Image (cartoon, rainbow, N blue to C red; front, side):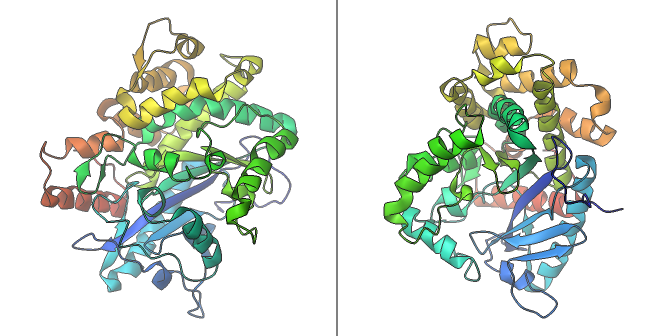
Length: 417
């Protein structure tokens, strides 16, 4: 049975799902980065390519040569089957890397790489795009060359569906790091953010602030207005640095939600990659279930969803980026959406409250429910990584923990400290 939808007609809400996972290529023993993705991305003629498509799954390059992306090669029918398929391809790539004494590492930030001196950009096709980014923003540093994420693409058909999907996802976005943060370590030290990747991503294009905005996108619900107020503004502001218009495309937009009018979908970009694909997909199923709750207006009418300004949601996102599931949410207007009258609640408890009170049990497989229960009990991967480490961290401690994470990825198992 095919993983993908075999039809070309436009997709309506939740009729298809696109998933993208990024992984680091590292030495099997030292776990230092190895810039060799082009050793894997070769077609049957041994020619280096940007993308290989195998059985409905694609392998592709990213900005840095030590990163490889595994993704659905189009919209998948059912999220619950995607994790198993992507895991199979993780294992295939790991086997191809073995002769190079290399393997894949999960997690949204490499724990000790020096992104200012050890990074090689993808040098093949599309290199002019990466060189343009590098010239304008300097792609050394954690915000560019040490950020591995999970992306979810959700389709819409027409402006009405875009409005519903964009409005719903804006309200879900601030909670995602509480479930998915996986980057508490970088530069061989514990960072003051459970989601260090998102903190770096949030500021990596500060030279031209309109590219990222506040991560939470503006309350805009039509293509015409989005083009005028977001995209055209970005293009104007980058134009002095980009005279050849290499970067003046929709994908320049780095908000946490990226509308792709060329494919009628919204890409959700705030999720750290997890220890193995089944964990990523369990969290994505939770994201989709909560998004549906808003779209179906079970709790909160669309009119009210539209009225949230990004300035109101941004502090919640900043808190979950820093504290993950332990972020304390005190915004009464936000808590009231979920039937809560308490003065405050942790982000983790709110995510669990939504899961238990508002999402029907048959929304998930038993395996997905078990994974979500693990996250509610033990915290996101970032918390579990920290709990596996001593208070004073030595390099050997990091090597041991991240070797365990590599094994979790190889065998498709959750990381339990």
